[in-house]
Length: 404
Image 1 (cartoon, rainbow, N blue to C red):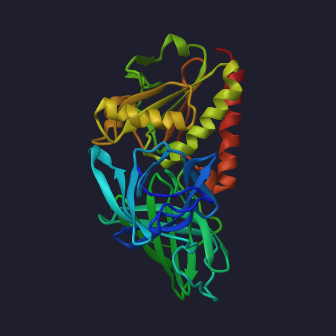
Image 2: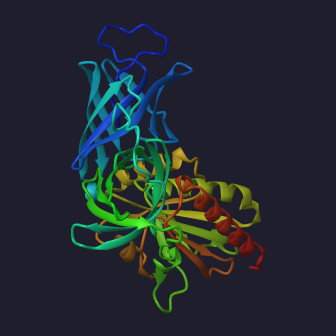
Image 3: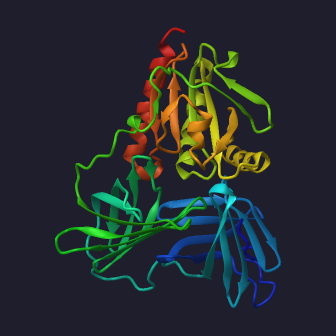
């Protein structure tokens, strides 16, 4: 939830201390320093709305309430909120993120009106070039390593792009180059990321990654136009001898839904494991909704299994319902479990391994598993997103042509 105060565009402020509409430079305070993002407050047909801005992405936040010097924004489709008051000509407050086991992570936020810059008010006139495709290695505080690819575009001092991982992408990140140092950030209502890196004379780019949830990793790498990631089909697997998933979970109203079941017999069924807290699941939901709408008459069904951060059914269902409403989902959304204690493997014992949220399972008309895809490359990945959509759609079309 977010709280901010504002008056309508073109309206006279209620007082000299009233919050103006327009653009703000918002900053979250994380362990690595300032994590900035763009915030805009406006009115649409008299209704107050907000926009979260990261490079080319503008996330519309329609659920905004005004109460005196406060404004409340509920992050669309996420169980998160931001609360602040307009004090001393700026907003001060906190973003609250729901974390595993129902823990609330509170992050201080300050938003200054009328500021369009992200990291520095005056850009560097001669920054180094950070554009290109970078093969990176991330290392967490236990020393565990994971591969990633950064794809960056630079125009002057402005840098935008994303980081691709085998489990999905880091969505839209934006920032700037200053000398030999790179500053990138993102807050889109779902997660908060900060990347700081320095380009060495040997061509190595190295730095730190901080998330709003408190995670910290170091990373390093070099430009590599041929860099590749692990095959997402290899990250999740059924146990030897298992040929399908079997489960019964409640839908958002508490009614049990079983797979395999009569309502799915003879159809191509896509089952995805996700959660309302998962940004890549939001991107995947758009694809699945459109795929189902265009091919439902041909015999396709989708089931969404939600693993939420809280074990309480009412709370989990509320989060999943907000997710379903954001994307106008009209296929079964089931509360399957939590993100803690390897619950996915416990609730789906046919699985030998589980690698990422989301993970998609594609079953043919005979009920046989034909494909698994871990993670989802969203719109921030550009051509990768378009290719994944084409590839998955073509595969589903082949299955639809097969006899039941």
